[in-house]
Amino acid sequence: MTRFSFRRLSLVGFLLCVSGLAFALVLQHGFGLEPCPMCIFQRVAMAAAGLCFLGAALHAPTGGGRRIWSILALLGALVGAGIAARHVWLQGLPPGEAPACGPTLDYLLGMLPVAEVVQMVLKGDGNCAKIDAAFLGISLPGWTLVLFIFLSLYALLLPTLARRHSIFA
Image (cartoon, rainbow, N blue to C red):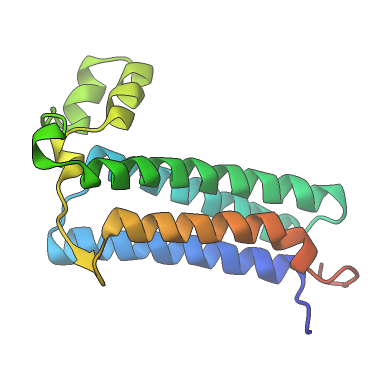
């Protein structure tokens, strides 16, 4: 099996995150699908994981440094997976059980402390329970969850997948 350098594999992780964010922006600006607050938090988690992968690619550490960058990327992906899983769960609730729609994220940030806004958004509301689009019977947050799970596994295995000795490690 051909093994690639840690730097190249980290760059692949970064490009996966950039692709996910680019797809979200195309859906928003190209197709008019406005993100709910939970979608925005998923984007933040995707960006965090992507920045960790980018940091790993630029730094190209050896030994324990590889594990540290991988753990940071893993944490970003796991947070995103948790938010996406909650989002999918909200979308699966029967219509009468979904929480009522709340105010916009901009309004909440203007009126409440950030910690309270985060708590409210993670509880979800009717905006987050609405399914705007699906592909192969899976909603967009469902596909985002799949990507976050893949990124989590990728980050977890990244130090093992990388070639041990390389000039361009």
